[in-house]
Length: 121
Image (cartoon, rainbow, N blue to C red; front, top):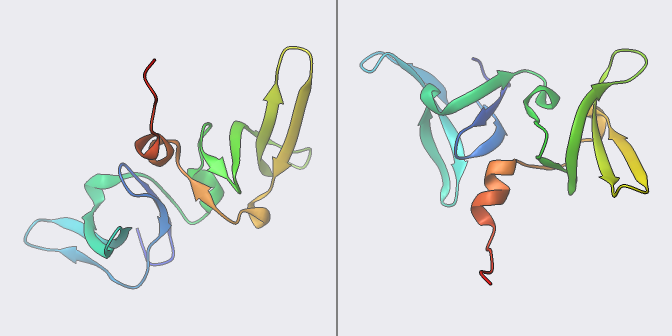
């Protein structure tokens, strides 16, 4: 884990580690600043689900990228990872791809579900 890597955490979503990270010798853990409602707070490595220098590696089916729900993760003809969004209603199937260079925003499925308000009938 190093400055510039991307992490997916259990509760805070996906973000990039900035220069404010260090190894806490007392607790023998790696600590870094993570975004929260009040700015940033210290987070431990125990919160990390995935780590990668490439943000596209952290995205999972069910996450929202650029406002679109990801339904599949695949590779194009050249072996480049792509994110597939669209729908299949049984009669029509629409699928579009998002490449790494086109990623502008991500909302993890966990974050989306935590903000969801369900109406009981």
